[in-house]
Image (tube, rainbow, N blue to C red; front, side, top):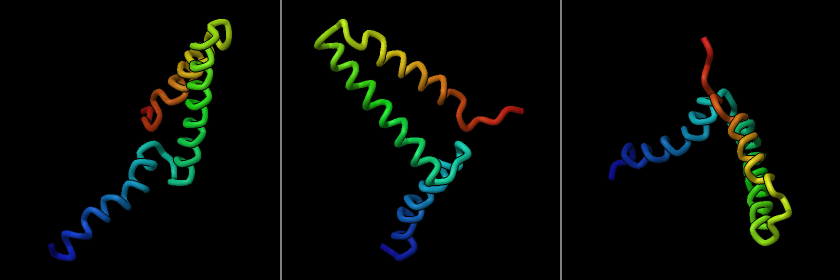
Length: 82
């Protein structure tokens, strides 16, 4: 394998740190923070769903309300109006 062939996957991998965040109008650190906040919210929603499964009277709509709110927040992200 030539050195040029070996560098193509590395270049593709490194460009993913720039290209995807840019596609939603963010830098890598901004995108990382956004994704981490979303992950934390999903984790909490999952925990609420688990507790609800065990005790149905608790957290009756927490998980679904969280997912709906997150969907509304992310819907259309990275799209320009014009």
